[in-house]
Image 1 (cartoon, rainbow, N blue to C red):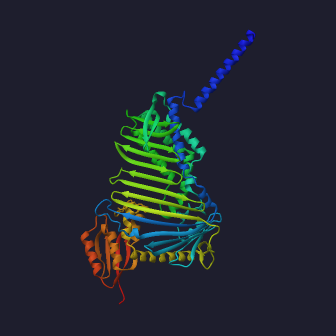
Image 2 (spheres, rainbow, N blue to C red; image 1 turned 180 degrees about the horizontal axis):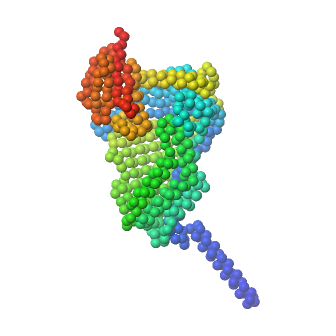
Image 3 (cartoon, rainbow, N blue to C red; image 1 turned 90 degrees about the horizontal axis):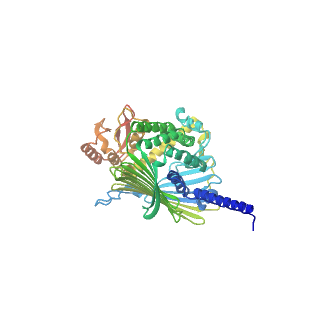
Amino acid sequence: MMPRKKRITLMIVIAVVILLAISISIILLYLNTDLFKSNQTLFTKYFANNLENLASIENSNNKTQYEELLNTNPYAENLEMKINYTKNIGTTSENTANAINTLKIVEEGQVDKTNQYDEKTIKLLNGEEQKMQIEYIKDNNTYGIRFSDLFNQYVLAENNNLKDLLSKAGVSEEKIVNIPDSIDVNSNILEEIKLTNEEKKIIKEEYIALLVQDMTNSNFEKQKGQIISINEENIVVNTYIMKLTKEQLNNIYIRILEKIKEDEIFLNKIEKLQNKINIINTISNEKIDLKEKIISNIDTIIEKINKNNIGNDETKILVYESEGQTVRTTIQGVDYEINFDYLPIDGKQFSEIKIVDRGVETWKVNLNQNANKVSLEVNNNNEEIPIKLTYEKTKNEEEKTGTINSLIKYEKGTDKVEANIIWKTNLISNLEKPVNLNNENSVKLNDLDESQTQAILNRIKEGLNAKMNTLKQEINIAEIQEPLKVVGILKEENILEGNGVSETEKNRFNSGYEILQGENLNSESVLSVINTIQDNLINMEVASNEILKLEIGKSNGNTELVNTLKEFIEKQQNVNYNIKVEYDDVGLVKYIVLTMVELER
């Protein structure tokens, strides 16, 4: 028999081992399961999982093996884009007879990214008839374009010393001050502002801490075994709830907004965006300080919150968890609800954001995606006329070929605009007859002096203006503007007031009339111009026997005047017209001037 002392020692050792095993088991259960964790801890955990959900949505767009091959091997490409416009859908007057429906853009090219070569030919077709052709080329750091309908030579620019080049082109020093000497055309701004894993970790820790700061266990509760429906799937969930007073919720908003204003990660991304915007500013003549604008907007929001920070309204933030996965997050206010759903099943991902205001669904955005297909649908019922935007992209990839079919559909009331883009690629061993740029087929602007540069650019401008005038006679521009107005590319604007008009508003407004200018336009083209401006044509002045001045105004057009003018134009024989615009004192288009040009008999 074992001595008593040894038995006691053995029992103590066994007890310690058992206690240690239990302790380790409890620690492992705590770390790897939800046992023993408070409702506050679990709410924080599953709310933070939304960042992982967003990362999964983002990572689903990672390049495929075939797409990686396009970065390292030469390939031929072919692209075709068509736009179709249908109005009065679902009525007896449904109509697809719009000039834009007969247009098509086709592009053929070959690319070798390894050797920095890219060559494209872009054509505008009306039916099967070619109306315009543009050729683009990139060879190392030199970029060129050729309007082969007009000129035989490529116009080239080397991507360096850009300030000097723009100065020679007549751009003011004020506009080019923020332009770099060269532009990193290979940079992807979306990749540049993409959060790194380390940045995501920091944001997750710091912002979640702000969310639950000053909260106690009394703010949290748990509901077990509920059933919710996501994308027609019934799911059993546990729900973790944080209840907030109006003051607590507003304090969270303010803490987060103040944090954003000084967040180095956020400000660094803004700086990278600003660098891109500076380049756009030079083209658009609009100065945008993104950081200043965002901080100003944040300050305005904070000020509004502080003025409305009293009340007993309760807000709930609910996090729904199923098998360790956050599948829904909901913010419930007194008269609104915001839902974010995320459900990955069998290699597919479904995500949806829905906003309900006073019982009415105002916004819904859902995204379905798998390895070969992406489908995005946006419904905006917050407008007088509901809007629905649909985007679908389908990929079909084989060993050496790939096809991407993209469909963008915009529906507003009884109007529908669709754009279908088919992009085909084919891996090749070598480029077929790449263009060898030389003095005979190209002219490089960097090598010219100021007068030569401006002479070349003026010649291009004149040639393009003449080409556009020809296109306007052959294509019904007024009809094409209809679908562009439906989707908001062109604004249904009246004349702007003279005081307080920004340069951008002025340029945008004037461009709609400046494009109508031309020389030796026939009666049919002039009637098309009148159709375009008729809603704002308020007066007509006979300046001479040959000149009519059509006044553009803010009020609705004069129908009787429009009809009289059309009858006059239709009766004229052997007459063409020169059209130009005249401006008011603040630089807005005020008159469309028609000058009659008698044709030779």
